[in-house]
Length: 479
Ligand code: AMP
Ligand code: ZN
Image 1 (spheres, helix red, strand yellow):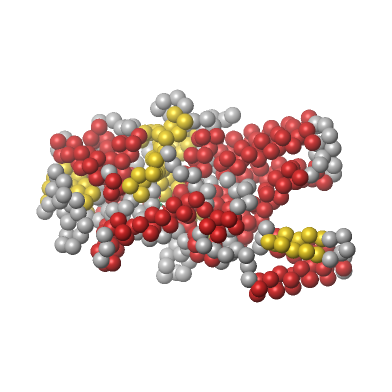
Image 2 (image 1 turned 30 degrees about the horizontal axis):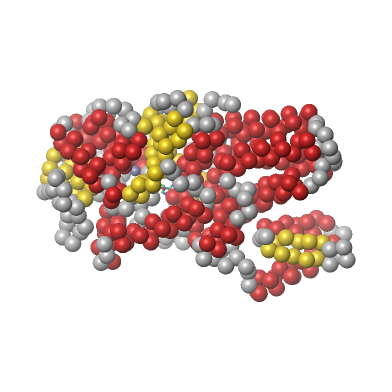
C-alpha cells in the first residue's frame, strides 16, 4: 500500500496524510443549502467527498464523518418568506430530494447527518465565547466578527487584507474576496422573518457560525479533514477558521480539501444559459445514475470537470464494460489451474489502483489501472489463456474497486423506479429498437460485422440486450 497524500488548501501543497490520532479520521463536509434541488455541480463535490470517505475506509481508517444540512440561510429565509411558509416547511421537500439523490448516486450516508436548525444552542454558545474574548461587536441587534482582531485572517484563501477598512461590515452570507469585511455571526430579524429568541437576543445565525459550531460539537476542537467545493474556501471556510480558532486558541482543521467546479460544455452552469441540470433532468433524458456517478468521479477532484453529454455517454459505456467483465468472471468456465503471470498482473493492477487514489485521490489513474487490466484480461479470456484459478483474485480486485467507485451493481432501473421514473420504455421506443435490431440483422447478412457490432453497442448503451437464437432470429430485452 502507498502513503496517502492529499492537497491541503491551507499549505497550498500536497502533503502526506497523517491523522491526529492513528487509525481514526474525523471529517466534516459542508452539506447542501436546501433552498432548491441540488444540481450536478453540487454532486460533483458530494461524489468527491464520497470517494474520499470510501477510500479512507478501504484503507482501514475508522471514520467519523459529519455532513450538515444548511436549512437556514439568507436564501432560505427569503424564499420561505416569499412563499409565506415556515422555513422548516419550505426546506422539507429539498431535504428529502437531497437524501433521495444521494441514495440514487450511491453517495454513502455519513456517520452523522445534522441540521443547522437543530444546533442553534451550540451556535449561540460559540458566539458568547467570541463575545467574551472581544472578537465581536453589536450593531442594530446583529453581532459581527471583527476580522482585524484575528491575526491569521486570510491564511486559507491567501487574500490580501491591505486596504480593507476596519469596521466595514457585510451582511450577506456569500460575498466575493473584494468585499472581505466584518461578517455577521448573528442577524437581527427583519419584519416578517423567521427568528429564534436566545440569550444573545432574537435573530438567526449567519451561515459561517453554523458550520464552526456544528463541526466542533460533533468532531472536537481540531478535526482532521474539512471538505467542500472551491467556492467555499472564501469566505465560508476562512470565516470558519476565524471563528473556531479565536474561540479555542487551537488549530481548527488539519487538512482542507476543495473540489474544483463542474462546468457544462465549458461554461458555468446557469439557468439563463439553459445548461443547468439537476440529477432528475438527466434521468428524465434516459441517463443512468451509475453513468452520472462514474462521469462525476472520473475527473480528479482538483481538476475542473467539463460535463458533456458525450462524456456521459462514454461513462455509460465504461460502466457497461465493467459490468460485462464482472459477468464474464461470474458466468464463464475457464480452463482449470493458475497462471503466475496473470496473478502478477492482477496484483499490479490492484497496486496501481491504490497508488492512484493515494496520490491525492487521482481517480483517473485509478480508473486507468482497472481498465487496462480489464482489456488485457478480456483478451486473455478470448484466447483461452485466463484460468479458473485467477477468478477469485480478479473478483476481489473488482470488489475493492467497487467499494470506492460503486458502479458495478446493476441496480439503475430499480433506483430510477424508486424516484418515480418508468424505465420500462414505451411503444415508440420499442418500434425504434426493432428497427435497429433489423438493421443489425441486415448488416450481419452482408457480413458487415463492424456495422453490426456498432449497432449492438448502441443498443447496449441504451440498456438493450440482444440474444441471438439458434434458428438465426434475434430476441431483445431491457436490462
Ligand atoms: P451550496 O448548497 O450552494 O452550499 O453548495 C453545496 C456544495 O456544492 C458546496 O460544497 C459547493 O462548493 C459545491 N458546488 C456548488 N457549485 C458547484 C459546481 N458548479 N461544481 C462543483 N461544486 C459546486
Ligand atoms: Zn459549511
